[in-house]
Image 1 (tube, rainbow, N blue to C red):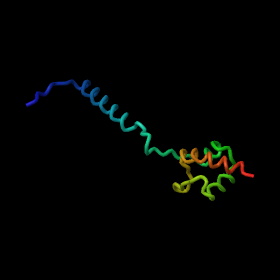
Image 2 (image 1 turned 90 degrees about the vertical axis):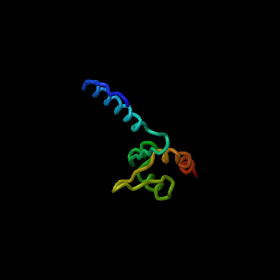
Image 3 (image 1 turned 180 degrees about the vertical axis):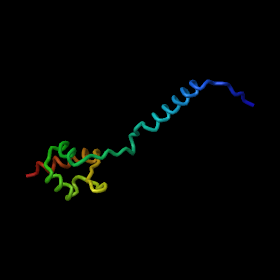
Image 4 (image 1 turned 90 degrees about the horizontal axis):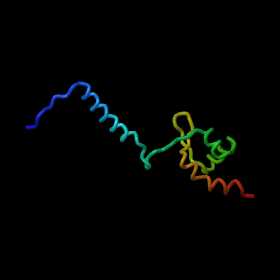
Length: 94
C-alpha cells in the first residue's frame, strides 16, 4: 500500500497549476498538419496586389478557391499562396 504524504495547500496549488500550464502548452501548440488559416477578401487583395473585380473574376473562373462561411467569403491562405504561380501566368498573357 502506498503512503500518502501531507502537502500544504499552497504547494498543492502550485503543483496543479504547473501541470495545467504544461498540458495547455501541448494542446495549444499548433501542428503543421491540419491548421487552416482563413483570410478575408481585403487581405487577399493586399497579398496579391489586385483589385476586387479581378478577385471576383478569378473566383468565378476557379483560379482562386474561396469558401462561404456564414455570409462571408473567406480564402485559405495556403491555397492563395499556391495560386500565385498560376495567377502570374494568367496576368502576363497577351
